Image (cartoon, rainbow, N blue to C red; front, side, top):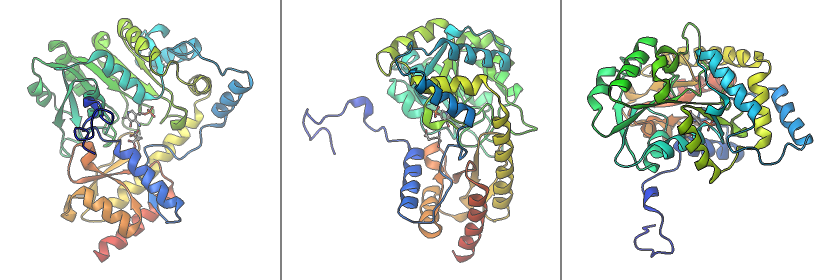
Length: 396
Ligand code: PMP
Ligand code: GLU
């Protein structure tokens, strides 16, 4: 539809022109629909663990319903949950966040939306490292600011180079988005890089938005570092975003959070008070149990992901011309398919049509030549994928 031709009634706001729906969610939905229609699809699209939410967390949700904790809560979240989030962050990063500096929202995606709407406007520019999580550029654009994309390379393990970032800074640059471990590459930032970026942020007076939603999904010997831990002096210019979706297999509960300077969090809360109000009360009680309760399920899931990662990555590297670095975190393999001589988009379509393997092509992540394969799928699915790919490569 061309909104200009359709007259005022059907007009869509300018700020949404050119914004496409999330390709990861769209492809996951397509794979699920094919499975529902009876096709034997091997689905490696999903950015969500296949494990059930831990039983004690589910029970806390059920208890919240039974105890009639089903009403509005304070906009920023129940105080117990905000305290548990502050305590978790303070323990992990040796910080001193007060519960009042925590805003609970409807998923980390919502937290990021609130951050950008609150802190950005035209003609601000935001530095985003590519490949990036699909939602960063649209989220930035929706605030009126302009995404400035800085590519990383396979040779550099998809890690940022501070001098490339420095060269991209202009008088308009307002913020930089960090995402370690990264979706889609699984790259984990080291202390040296983080401290160089912190230095740059101080020098150029930049805000740091650090999306650490995969912070608990880091595989030894890799370790997760937050920029606020490596360079505590940036805490006053950083918003840290996290959530329970990935760590506790709680994608559907929709609980994310942001932590940052009080004035920013207060304004974000004002914004949220006019949009969603509080995040769902029942989910908040479940998230409280997830964070404050026993953590053994998290270690089990992490160990499982690590095993699956090794099966997938080793298997892919046996299938020339595919090649894949072993990701240090998150649950995605970023597989180089450029040796097949076609665009990643074409390869993903061919795999789906000819081998019933569903993956996400790299174009939506701002890079050519790769597909993202989630190993938050069962070991059986991963093994079957490798077999089918072997067949497909033989027959092509
Ligand atoms: N950031 C990144 C990097 C992600 O991969 C996701 C997953 N969708 C999110 C944020 C948002 O997660 P959620 O909204 O489920 O908390
Ligand atoms: N973040 C997940 C992914 O990248 C979930 C989908 C989405 O929110 O875009 O697949």
